[in-house]
Image 1 (spheres, rainbow, N blue to C red):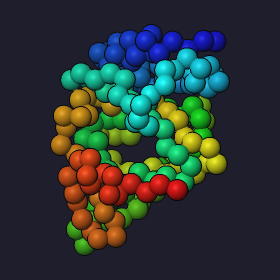
Image 2: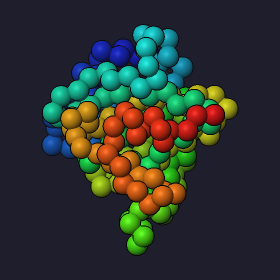
Image 3: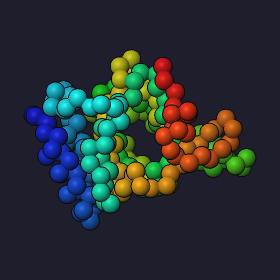
Image 4: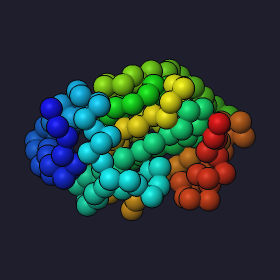
Length: 175
């Protein structure tokens, strides 16, 4: 099976317009990552680890690389999100409101190569690449992610901070 990035993006855009958007996007990503070895050779070289492939008011499609040992801080999306991992292993920690004004960990999900994770619009989660190799995957959001007001959560200081480049860079942990 071969992977065609342009066709994948087009299929996701069509899926987002369907009456069963989340389910159809999940199926589209599952089919694409069923043969993880076909994906990487078909991709261009991206300038950044988090590359926006397409975005409009209905969908945002990203290709993300998280290096081994990296941790993305707790954050929200304010929209449904589907992650499809085609290389590596991730730990996604989920959080709920804490009486002290912050958030506390409520559960965790391990995402393996070739698997997807669907996240609801009100979820707060962090992501850690726990494999010895970099995690690579597609992150698809049902909305315009870059134009949406979102939040980062500092668990240690019980703070809710605007999701912006400065706060994200300060809170992201690398190996």
